[in-house]
Structure formats: C-alpha cells, structure tokens
Length: 321
Image (cartoon, rainbow, N blue to C red; front, side, top):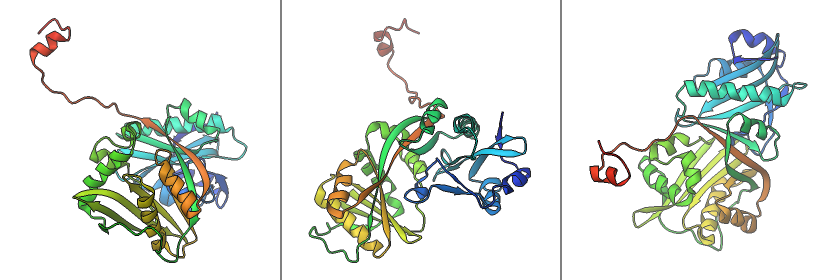
C-alpha cells in the first residue's frame, strides 16, 4: 500500500530514478493543451517547481523507496483558487488506486490552506474522470480545443468595429460585467459571482500577451487576449452580442497580430457555440481536443446577514422573538 504525503527534499533520491523519463500527465492546465501531454521528470524541475516553489503544493505516493505517483496544484491569479496541473501515475502502478488518494490529499491540503475552489481539467474520455468524481470533484464545464493558423494580414470582408483600445487596469469591472452577460449562472457560480472571485479565478497565459477591449456608449462589449509563445499562439475572446460579424472582426484582428506563428489555439466553452462555429466555418479551425473541467468547492457560500421587519418573520411562520 502506497503512503500518500507531501513531497520532501529527501525524496530526491527516489525521484532521481525518474530523471529524464516521461509519463502521461492526466491533469491538463491550459498551458499543456494542444501539445504532448507527457510529463518530463528532471531533478531541476523537482527542486524548482515541487520542493521550493511557494505557489505550488505537491504530494507523492510512496511505496517503500519507490514513487508510484505524483500530483501537484498551484494557485491561479488569486490564492483562493487552485488548479491541479499534474496528476501522474508511474508505469505499472494501478492508476485508480494511486490517483484517488493523491487527489484526496491535494483536497485535504487545499482545505487547510484556505482555498475556496479547486479545479481539474481532464480529457473527456479519461477513465480517471470517475476517480475524480469519487474524490468529490464535480464536472461544471465542457470545452473544445480548436486549432488553426495565423494570418499574414488583417484584411477581411468584415471591417473592424470602432472603439478598440489596449486593456487598462480600470477595465476589470467592465470586463467582469461582460463576462456576466455571457456566462451561464452555473458557470459563474464556480468562476466568480463577484468581481474579486472572478479575478482570483483567472489563469495567466504564457509568453507575450496583449489584450484589447472594444466599447461603445461607455460599455465594454468585446475583449480579446492574444498570446504568443514557443512558435504558437492562443486567442481568448468574449463578445456580446455574439454576432457573426463582430466575432469575425475580433478573431481576424487577433490572428493578424499572431502573423506567421505556427498553430493557433482557441479553447471554447460549450456556451460560446457561435464562436466555435465562426472559427470552424470562417477560419478553417479544426477540433483538437475535448475536455471537461471539474471543481471541488471547499467553502460554503452563505447569504449576507441583514435585518428584516418583525412582521416579515411572523408572516413566515415564526413564533416571534
């Protein structure tokens, strides 16, 4: 029976046996999408990311002097939201019997650390999905990864709408309102019902990142994030109303900013179906993956305390003070 515990510096000897080897990583944070899902173990990575890192917690499954699995979680923009970004089971180990206690230990430590929300993204057909559900995770969002190419120019039959500018710090509240107009209530219940919760939930794109907003009549109606790293690009788009012309304009503008970058990735939630259709029909993007994100809520949302007239209490069936 493997012992599940926090990683220690003394584990370097056992981990060194894996140095340079790769294992499938079942936890798919955004930065791992679209590429090789292998998990390369190196002593340098162990020291930097798992043992001395202050924004990550790592647990291992130890059997004697051998490591049977590893799981790690790191916080997103705010420390109240963590995401499991590594879930690895060594070759020859029982994936279910190792993954379940690893996830349960991550949940336990997150709860002790005051984390409000724990997230885990998996491939939709990954059998560990049932293991995650047994450890208390609940699916809340399905996404499709679309892959396409950059563009050499910004010419398109749909002209760019006016009102574009670079995103400012003061745009946090307008963008939160834009998000609330687009995301269904069950999604917002996980990702943020308030501005501060939503900000904590944001994950950081890798590489060079540029952000733009479009507004009219003092209201933000469009947001675009363009990220480029390692010869590939990524777009994130919010637009309301989700009309085809506006989406074509914003996506075309973003692809032009990426230029000659190789592949371009866009992760589209199911509730943004018009965006998915525009990317496939107008820009020849193709599906490259299907994912489900699960959440484990570690705090209970309570209503705000407030006073009410005594008559209201009596009317509700109370016997009085």
